[in-house]
Length: 94
Image 1 (cartoon, rainbow, N blue to C red):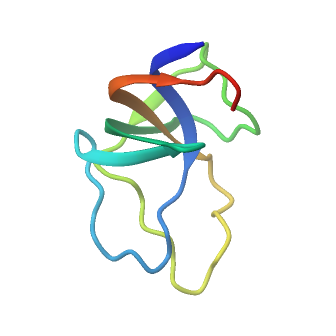
Image 2 (image 1 turned 90 degrees about the vertical axis):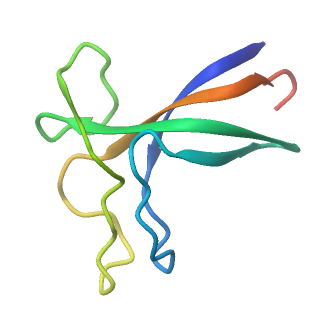
Image 3 (image 1 turned 60 degrees about the vertical axis):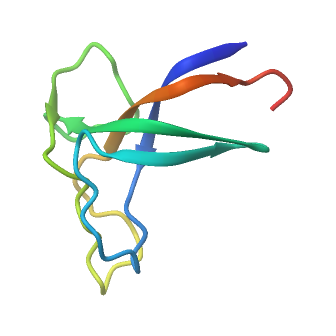
């Protein structure tokens, strides 16, 4: 199976100090493949446990920065990224 779009739950690495804006490019690695992707960050309007495509979501200006004292995600709704890949990612055998 090949795809050029991915939705993933994401959080910023605690020690990465740069802002990751919506519309910015990121590296995506899956197995032994790395591709570039344009990221759009969003979260659900209300707290939810799993991603539900039928719900309304708020597009964020950037990926929220994790608090220094908290290695875990906050109790709020999870943050997701819609990733538009520069080329198809082959998911066969991963």
